[in-house]
Amino acid sequence: MKNYNNIFEKIISPENLFLAWDSFKSNKRNKADVQRFEWELERNIFQLHRELRRGAYKHGAYSSFYIQDPKQRHIHKADVRDRVLHHAVFSVLDPIFEETFISNSYSCRIGKGTHKGVSALEKFIRQISQNYSKPCFILKCDIKQFFGSVDHAILKNILKKRIKDENARWLLEQIIDSFSSRQSDIFYVRGLPIGNLTSQLFANVYLNELDQFIKHKLKIKNYARYTDDFVIVGNTKKELENILPKINSFLKNTLSLELHPKKIVIRKQSQGIDFLGYVILPHYRLLRTKTKKRIFKKLKMRIAQYKTGKIDNKSLNQSLQSYLGVLSHANTHKLKEKLLNQFWFWLNE
Image (cartoon, rainbow, N blue to C red; front, side, top):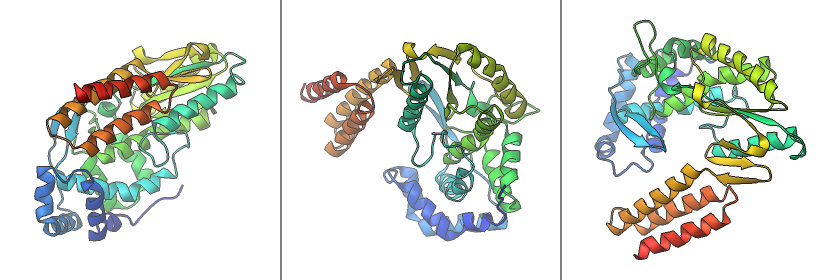
């Protein structure tokens, strides 16, 4: 395995920090905290650089809030300077770990995403069922409270296998240990903050251990994962039932995680399977009912914002096109017409 010894200087270089700022500030220029940081940008970047070089950097505290996406999520938001550093770390580390990931890991990776994940599952189903002429079964699982359960010590040990630069490891530990969840206790510190860019990378690094186990130890080809949701396609229900205890054991003993017992589903392909917002059925794909309701609700909200002057016509149109884009990945011709009709009705009422 290739390892990396001299990455700290690359991460903390002023050039990389300024590039990280450019990446971070996109779509955030109207935020008050971002504007304050930008007001003395050079001073703030060089001060951050000096603190990092001296080993004096301390990650700041988080502010927290809840969002509905679609279920309620507890978001933890770091200060601007810490988030700029997260971008600097991500830009250097992501290419290092990207080459270790399997092709069927679809979360937070360039060229991947939910639509590619859904298409991969459809491909597996067509192959195993011989284009829907034979029965096949799909196992769908969800890891219980994944972000809150990530064990800091285990994550650090995984990173250590590849990152040999002690200064870089110190910096990663500063970021990892800046947060602990309610799943922590006196023996184990746990949790990644939903909201950090680095958390997306750490999640993929952590669950890459599961990916490698399933692909290379269990020799399962028809497997796809998106963050803490994953699917496996098999010929029989019994085959998938026999796999479950092995996965559970690996998660518990190696990653200190567990499957959500109420979210383990095995379905015959003719029944359809709900994955990443879409319901996959033989020969066609539908949008999940909750996803449809969320799109209509959010579009109505955006129109209300437009009417009160909170957003302009361009932003409203971008939202509409985004929702139509989601619909375009499923068999939703009638739903698209309904959305457009509703859009014009709300706009003109």
